[in-house]
Image 1: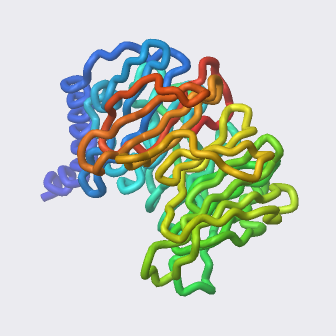
Image 2: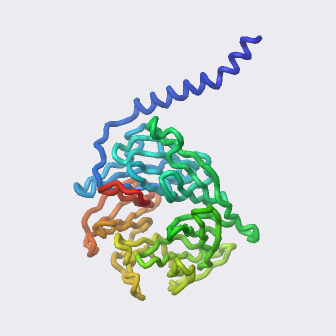
Image 3: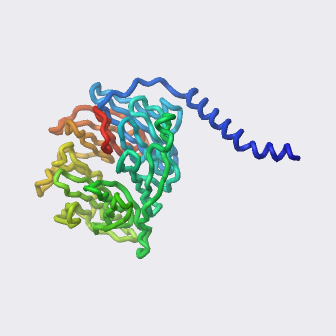
Length: 378
């Protein structure tokens, strides 16, 4: 009987060892040899279909106009999971935020090799670095912003980056009948991080990075879906206004310009009620903003009137990014949300340059720097 109990006690260790061997065998068996990624390329995160576990990562060599799809799986023999929401690069490591799988994979940006993972999230959305050992991760359902150590305690000795959650910032709105606050994208001004609350919400939250506390909020239009910050420290917030018959109500979509220092809304633009603006971003010099509203629009941050630069007829423009060096524009077309998506590349004067296929529902872009940088790249 004693031997039986000893066997039971040893079972977890035996199983753990077996699982480790199985995982290593899986990686070796299905991994492919891929050419190293040159500096200055572009990663495209493909969400995949919700609940299908078919998210993928594509890499585009900007210099040679060539794309390699599903690089994470090909290199590691490991599926990414369900809904690849976003990606951020810090030095030579990429952090892949897999929303519905509740985890962040860490990958070497040069080799595409799996380096580690961070788990314990509810529904992670975006990651923003405060410094080398501290980052924030927003969450759709947790009513908190996670504080993480991106590298973990053993990275420098083992080469493994199994980061960990070290705490969280409580952002729950207990006064609302709706599930608030769901947090999304992040921008930083001085020691303060601003994050938009999109689903059934109308707030931009202000987080003090020194104390890791919610210190203020800014009221916006309904459902602020995206934010960016320009060279003059003006925060641009685009709001979709909600959807028809929403219990939270519907209003015309809006674009706000907010002063980061005073936290005051300086100016607002209103769209037609049947429009759906999204995907706001800036160019590398941060003097021009771009967004999707069926077509692709742009406007200098000192101007008052936007212009259409790329028509979106017979397309579903789902993602948008501007090269921080060349100001070339990349647009993701989700087609029908089922088949492989298409990326359109345009020059800085909006002339067509290239078109290539990627994975299912391409949603976000992440430029690989030509030189190492300690800044967020997402």
